[in-house]
Image 1 (cartoon, rainbow, N blue to C red):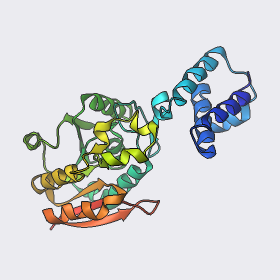
Image 2: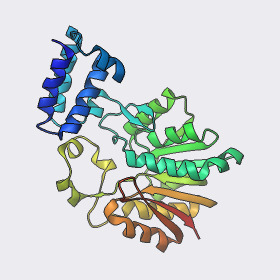
Image 3: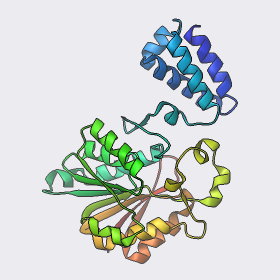
Image 4: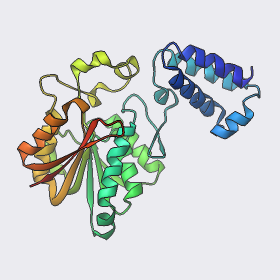
Length: 287
């Protein structure tokens, strides 16, 4: 069957789960993935017939998509900062908001890193490794470490770093366990996109998130939503260089509360909104 007919059929099926624009976008990405065409090539060649292997792959992908599995997990790839990362359900799917966090760091630190003899960055909860890999591509002189409690996540992060020949030191560390801090250095930048979604917020989230993305990397107890920020603030008191900064992504509904955690610990903070106008990031410096 011709690709354009299959495309129309998939869009109709996806429309049961997604808004029309999103259904159209997912369908386009599916066919680009299956046919290995670029977007322009896909448009130019969409009237050719699908091969048998392509049709079989389409059936398999469609079944997973209709079960609300995110496309990124179906095809095991996600784009972040112009780079393609391997992802599966052991790591979060990288978000555009996190790209903004990386951009904030690189704009602040580009000249300093170029002139520093040894500039060190730590990424806490590294997941797929998207943050340290993108930082390394932009601030290639920096010495970067990524830590995570999940061995499976660390394996994925290492694979993504190797794919881009990004030299990054990955370590298994539970940042909530203060004894594990002994294995870590002093850093000029500490960055983290930690778990910050409260359990009670699950009811507002789609099945594509709650049923597939790792809960360990997403959720915090309703009675202690600042759990990770308190630990990161405390960690920074002993592991942040004198002129260093902490950069964290935050829950849009808890900007003030998150800022207060760092203020109470002895930091001067700046809250930054994302492109949607939501409180999304905090930069903290020890006073």
